[in-house]
Amino acid sequence: MVFCMRRINRHVALALGAAAIVAAAYAATPPPDQRHRLSMATAYAALVFVAASLWLGPWNVLRRRPNPVSFHLRRDVGIWAGLLALLHTGIGLTVHLRGRMWMYFFRKLHPLSLQKTLFGFANYTGLVAALLFLMLLLLSNDISLRSLGTRKWKWLQRWIYLAFGLTIAHSIAYQVVETRHLAWVVVFAACVLGVIAVQIAGFVRWRS
Image (cartoon, rainbow, N blue to C red; front, side):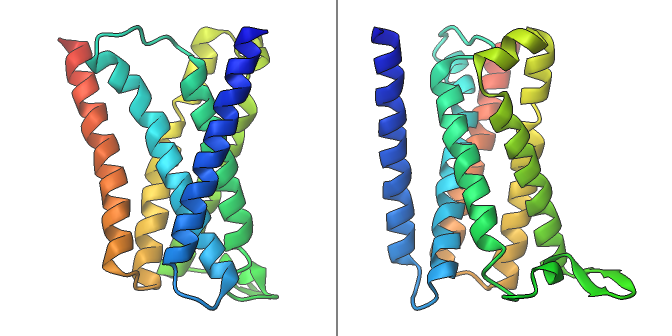
């Protein structure tokens, strides 16, 4: 019972944290397009949570703390990262080309022609990343861990690194397409470089 309450309290705290980041990013995005503001807000909230989930494991290694295959704090942060990423995907697909969502991926339907532009690249990488986040979200429970076994479950969980790489590519492409302000670029770079730095440091400590 105490464990359940602790986990519920953690999810409440994570939900409040996510809401606070979304609200701050929404307020920092120029009006009046509300869909674009929500897309930006959920994108950066998802980025922060993904970065945090990738930061926790190496941080345990650096502090010489136990770093099990799965621990609830990292899993819960990852759950909110996945939810925010999927929410961003749903909103983002309504920002541009309203009423013609297919044009995010195809220039023409007859004959079928792919969107072979930087805009298309941004959308393809974002879509694959979203599907990976969905898979990881569905695996983030004890039932999946027990049924798949530790080794296979952990192998599937490592797809987060590909999802993060695709997220970086998607974000950079959209920063170019939309000519983002420097402040957004700085926040993005800080999150990405922070993850890379702690991952490298954790790997070096683990090897030593």
